[in-house]
Length: 245
Image (cartoon, rainbow, N blue to C red; front, side, top):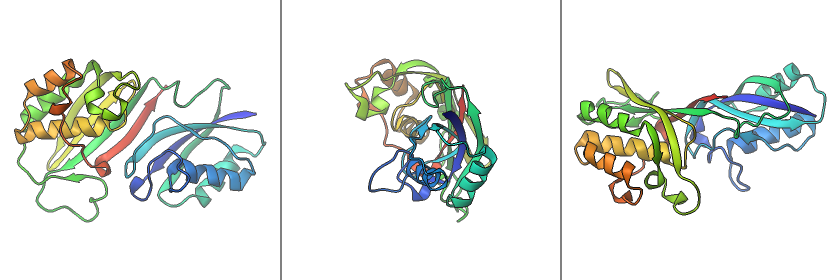
């Protein structure tokens, strides 16, 4: 039995996220269905990260085990011919038997795109959060640095409260400005549900002047201060861009 690794790009607008759901269309579910069609085998596709509904990916990684001996170039070509146009397999390779797409990931990286211009191009609306406001970028950029290090991210993912270890280590957290586009990038050893979008939402509130950098420092020190966390940023601006092993 071979252990196979996929690298996947997808435009998440039309999907209820990565994870399989019986009555909803998901990325995992669609790929599993197409592998079954080609190979006749019902497989379990293990994703490195579980993106939410409407979130995109340029570097998702997944693995699965296959009994059959179909040549990999044929499987790769067959998958991309059957998959909808908003999902593509960019790499397919055989890996060592012990490889696990989720548990062996050393870091994951996301980016979030905010467009601050007055008029949003119709070719961008699926991929950015349109926020035509004058933001305090200096404060936002400074506040982003506070997330680097080990923190309890319970306030940024309320669903995990009391259920699991919410400590994550963030390796980098910063903004890039490209004219009217703000791109936030965060790399960590793992992410909780809504963690990135709540982080972005809080940084935006700093930019608006509704939260201070001191507020963010307080919530990172005290996991009970969920009252200081801003509303969740919408999903369409978020991309899973890289998994490191």
